[in-house]
Length: 221
Image (tube, rainbow, N blue to C red):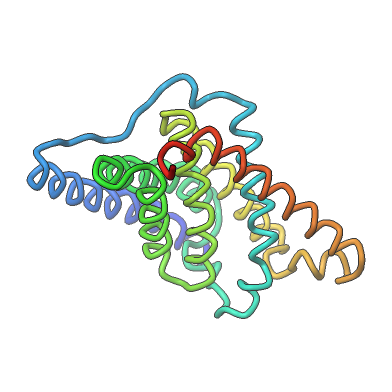
């Protein structure tokens, strides 16, 4: 049954996202007269940037975990299981969602609102389309990091790779039965957990400071 769900979702999801992309792109085209759909460059394959931002994503998810714990639990079985469910999560979702959220939405907004505001709004939009509260909050945080990576590299390649890695990590936790185990439980809620939590906080602060210096400083100042 779960495998069948995955097969069906692998068909429905790309079609629905393609329809969403075309609708948003057409709206932007008719409203602004420009159909800018993202930017791509070889810098988007920079392994140092991708690794750094992936570590930032993982650290950020550890930081917001206490908040996620008090929100309604997400339904992890909605997309099914099996090969096609994994393809949807790791390939289709990063491609279509980044094309829409960081491509059309962020690119359109930045012409009027600048980098920082456009990333915030695009991240909120990214969260809203994930519907479930806990997933939405997680998506907003990840969306900010994806958007920053996009501006840092001027390429959707980087965000698609990061998005794919993030989804692969989350999907692996579900498949191997670790999705219901929190980081606090993993470390027994003891001193080790607080040390890891503090290290994650330092990682997030450092990454944001680096992003502010290289991406947002001129925009905000």
